[in-house]
Length: 250
Image 1 (tube, rainbow, N blue to C red):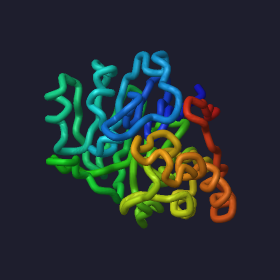
Image 2 (image 1 turned 90 degrees about the vertical axis):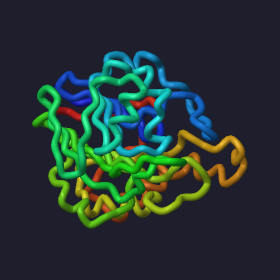
Image 3 (image 1 turned 90 degrees about the horizontal axis):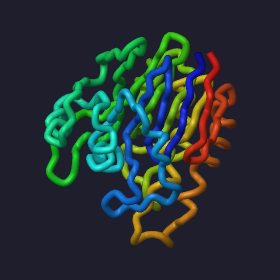
């Protein structure tokens, strides 16, 4: 069976492997706090029958409780120490994991790997570890990085068919714990995937900063692809538009 990968914008990716539908870091509203969604809304059909939701960390552009209301009934896999947030919001099927642990769902294995990124949820907490995920059905291995800077342990994530790597953020500048397009291309030299898709760009922008460095909304994906060709020529870098599908053959 083929695997499908739909980038829905920012860090929200819909995966289907072995008939199981996974959604990562769902931010599916047109506005989250001060951030506006600058691409088309996500069609409702993309959110039908989601089986598992993966939450990489607690920042509001990755954990939006209002978005999660549309996914009641899905199993949530969340950072260790954060389950109370989700249960208080009405979710019942919530499992906590820490980097280094492993979850299963049906025929899937979901490995929790470290991320070099703050796990504090502003403004008052809590703090829980940021992490990435390696999802495998025995035929495909897909790495979803969440939010992270480069770290040496990326070299210890083996045999990846696809790496979904963050290449920017949600405004004109980046703070620590993120990768820009060049950093993300360098990360490919450690990860060594067969294919890479840039995420975490081109979607969210502060309403008050609409005219400040607008190129940062549209250029990071292409910059990543061109730099990846230079630094990691064995990796096929593919840039998706929000809503575009990638099929990974068996």
